[in-house]
Image (cartoon, rainbow, N blue to C red; front, side, top):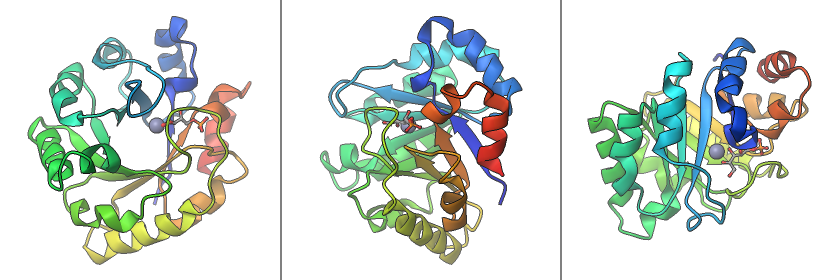
Length: 221
Ligand code: DX5
Ligand code: ZN
């Protein structure tokens, strides 16, 4: 499977976001990963649908909205209308509301004509989201606890990636996107890909690089 790189704009300079988006596209990014934080599900606050709306006309790349927010269902229409191509929501944020909230939220995303995905934190077994795999275009396995860029990769997630790929194959979706988010570097990307992930989010690795194009190419190799 071809590896796709999703630079996370959490690590970008927000004062020059437009230029950054164009540069990422030129440098070979495959998706733009947009980290939406609400100050409650995670400590920091980043941005909402307005950011998606403003960067939408600047690139042809898919916008990957990673919602680290409480009550995600209430926000879906704003991100869909703003132009997100895929919206992912956290199992933990949904499970604390009800057993069916994750499924309902994913169905709502689909009904807006947007791709959907479920996210699990490092301490949540991937089996918890197996029942929504048939609905998901992508699953996102966090390899750090969400909230901040620049953290260290948690290697135990690799076992979960393998299980996720095996289960996707078992249910007849061998090409389902499996995304890894947090602590991805040029050093660990080969083992992440070997475990079965095909979408790699990279924040600090891309933005700290003085040759973005080369770094993105190395992450794909
Ligand atoms: C963390 C975010 C990540 C973050 C990754 O909560 O979801 O997308 O930006 O940053 P790095 O690649 O620096 O770990
Ligand atoms: Zn993210």
